[in-house]
Length: 200
Image (tube, rainbow, N blue to C red; front, side, top):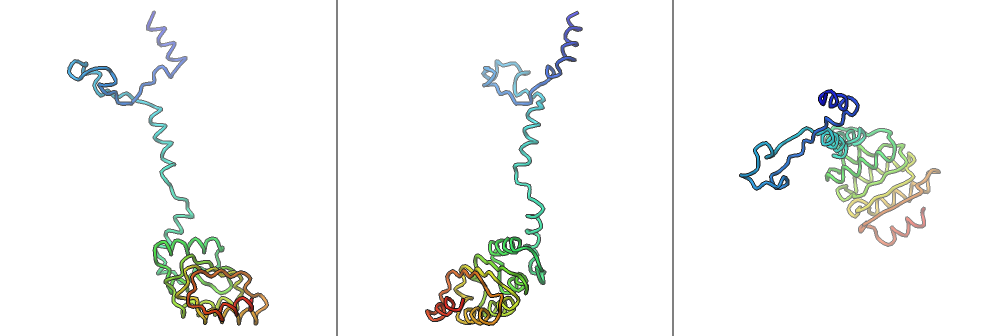
């Protein structure tokens, strides 16, 4: 009769069959090692909760999004990229950030990032770009409608020649540059900076 009652309870409440997989150490059982029964030593019982908790933690381990995977793939193989093409400014900015982070943003990478017709170019560390490469880049971007230029750590690349290109494009094209952010341009002289301020 007792067995029938237990069977009926198990059918009504399936959680009665739940058993833990947590390892039970001797100290927690109150045993002192030798006098504890062998069946209680490091006993493992199955636990659905532990498995569910482990599965839930899988998502928190940093599974990359498809966008991050694509950006990483492009950055790892950027020496094979001829041109990024017409992508959104946020994607171009993210590519530039990743290239700077891996110290691979150089003259060739700048040529691949800069496409005539784009409106914004933002580079957080332009210290590996030469002044000649930037002049060639600006010579093709400014007449084609570059409106926002942000260069930080650009002491090596943004000098009098780049400033002259910006001022000349502002006077010759109707869609001129509207925002200019230059950081660390130690090659600029006072008269170059003054011409930039008055020319824009």
